[in-house]
Length: 332
Image (cartoon, rainbow, N blue to C red):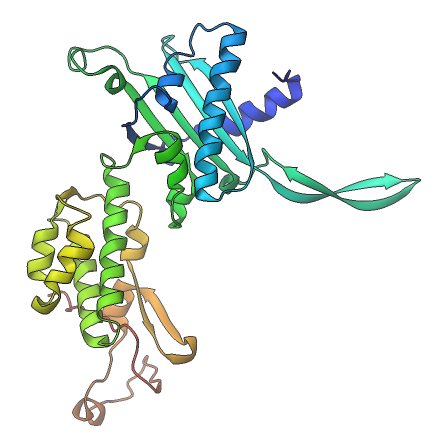
């Protein structure tokens, strides 16, 4: 047990308020692991424990994290477990994992300033060094009266990696916290979009035209406001060429076995971007609207011969074919 000075207490509460105060940063997940040695089982029984029992339960939670960090080959970190209540006095358990990093500070030695290394500095302001899992008991209602005990608890995850597009730390939200992404439309849609892109990149790597066509049609499907679910059977039959549909079943459809409610909030910016990439990292990049309205690609000798240098246009000749060529139909 470590006593917290007022200054330390202020830093911890300040970081939590900054990182978790904005609900848009949180991802609502489901609790799926509820056995005896799970985070949920320990967290749900913290309320009312005396100091000795609280320490024992906290050690079990820390050991669970250490076990899963070893599986994920993750560096050592500090774990904070907070037993709290909400405004209606219902239990809330917050688990804050703070990863350390090395830094420098300035000190004076015999009147001479010098730089000194500080090892394992944690609880700084940088988001990427925090992960927060939170479970809370939901208000009793007629709708949840017949639910299983763990279904009467909500789960929130705050992880910078979910927002940056990097691979989320599965060891933390799955192995340690025992949460599931399956009911989060934003995250599942993002994973589905990434899986579809990876399939196209892998299976059509030697056919630039087909790869471009499939990637563009995937983007069109995801951008279509009239499409409310990601239907993998429909995608297979309308976007994927027949000769690759068995591969699609194996690589994508077997992972996403049912349709997903579509929510593109986490990758809207990517959907709205277009690019043409040539050799030697030469890239023409912009919004899709800008490409549609301001860029024309000459694809035949006839088009080239009819080309006119009108006022307001710049003609650039680039050697080679682009890796991905956007062929969107002009809006009518």
